Image (cartoon, rainbow, N blue to C red):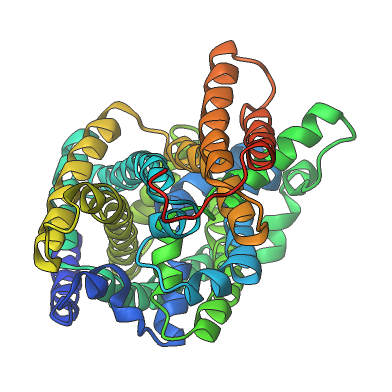
Length: 463
C-alpha cells in the first residue's frame, strides 16, 4: 500500500513539473524561469537548495554521533551561505543580468577566465548529485527492499527524465509544493514521536550535555577546524550555480535579497526537526539506531508510525530530494552549455540548439554522478566535498571581483589554480589540519598578488 501511494505521489509531482515546464520557451526560461518568480516561489526554491538528503539523513546521522558540534557544516553553514548571499552578493549579481555564474567571470575578467572558472564550477556538482541519488537509493532499499545500487540507478532514471523536460520553472513550482508538504510531514512526525517519548522535555533531559556543545574548546587546532566547518557550505556554496540560479530567478532585485533572508531563517528552523526526530528515535528505539545511522529515520518511520505518516514522510521526502537533484543536474549543464560550448561555438549555435546542448549535458552529468553514487555511500561527506572544491577555487575571485576594482584576470586565474593545487597537496599529505584553510588562504593571497603585479586589462581583450 505504501509503495502504491509513493509511486502515485511521484507521478503527480512529475506531472506538476511537466505542466510548469510548458512555460519554457527560451534557454533563459529554462535556466532562470524568466527572472519572474514571486517571493513565495523564490524563497521556497532557496529553502529547497539543500533541504534533501544531507539535511534529513546526513545531518541527523552526524548529530547522533557528534551533537550540534558535528553539524556546524549543515544546517548552520548552509543557512549562513544564504544570509551572506543576501547581504553581499544577490543585489550586485542580479543587477548584472547574468544567465549563469560563469557569465560573471566573462563580464568581469574576460573569456579565458570564464572558461577556467566554468571548469571549476561544473565538476563539484557530480558529488552533490551523487549524494542525492544515494539518499533515494536508501529510501527505496527501506521501502521496497531492493539493493541500494539498484535504487540509485532507478532514481537516476526518474530524476534525469524529470530534469530533462523541466527547467527552473518546473523546479520552482514543485519546490514550493514539496516544501509545504515536507515541513508538515516532519512536524507531524516530530509531534507523534515526542508524545510517545513522554514529551519534548523528557527527550531533551536524557541527552548528554556535550551533545549541545556549539563552540569549540580553547585549542588552536580545534578552532581552525570549527571555522573550516562553517566555511564548507557557508562560503563554499556562495560561488555555486545552484544558489545563483535560484536567486537570479526572482522577479526583482528586492525579491532576490529578501528571499535569501527568508530562506535562511526557514532552513535553519525546519532543519532542527530532523535533529529532534533523531533524538526521539534514539530515546525510543536505541537498539535500532545502533547500525547505519543514515537509515535511522526511514527504518523508524516504517516500523513505528501509521500509514498516513509513512505516506506523507516518504512521499514528500522523495519529492524534495528529487527536486534538489533536478536543480543540481541543471546547474552544471547550464555552465557547460553557456560558458564552455557557447564560447567555443563562436555564435554558430542558436538559442534552441544551446537548449539541446544543455539537455544532453544533463544526461552526461547524470551518468557520471550515478557511477559515483554506486561507489560512495556517505551523504554528508559527498555534499561537503562538492562545496570545498568551489570554496578553494572560486570564492576569492568572485568576492574580490565584486568588491575590489583592481582585481584582475591574472589574479583570478592564479587564485583558482593556487587554491586547487594547495588543497590537493594538503589532502595528499593527510595532515590533521583541514586542507581547505591553507587552500583558501593561498587562493586569497594569489588573487591579491596577481592583481597587484598584473593589473586588470580591458575585458574585451582576448586574454
